[in-house]
Length: 185
Image 1 (cartoon, rainbow, N blue to C red):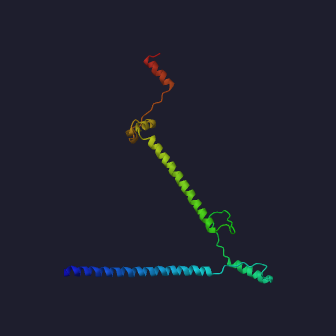
Image 2 (image 1 turned 45 degrees about the horizontal axis):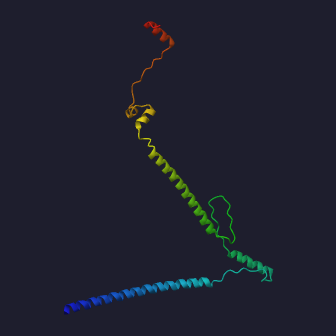
Image 3 (image 1 turned 180 degrees about the vertical axis):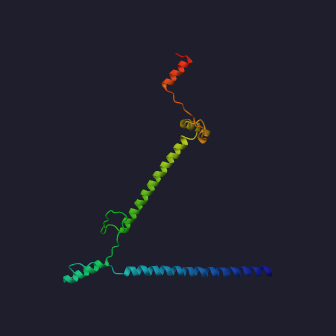
């Protein structure tokens, strides 16, 4: 009995140690997550605290030169990124309606769609050609092809004759002389 009791107490001790380790690691993980969340909240709060750029109205400033200098400073604060152009088409910057990144992303998506359309078109053409080859198998009857070419079989195409056939040309005078010799009238 004592032995079983010792084993149970050992198992209970091991389980207690395991649970303490699990709780400790869970606690560290939660602290790390809460720290990340707090850092992100601070970052968002600091962004919200930044003052927006305020346009200077002409009515606010009585001094004309002071007003002009402020307008120049505001213009310098605005930075437009140059628009990268891949073609020679004119590119216009729209004021307040959209952003350059949206225009570029739309142009890229149109380019991708055009490429996919062309690829699909060529794949369909190849598929139609393969289907036609399957339906009308031109290589089924090779003897027909040999007949079209003018050969009796494949051996006629592969062997070359080294004999040169001599052709004799006959003239009408030869025909008449040969027919008279034979006695044909």
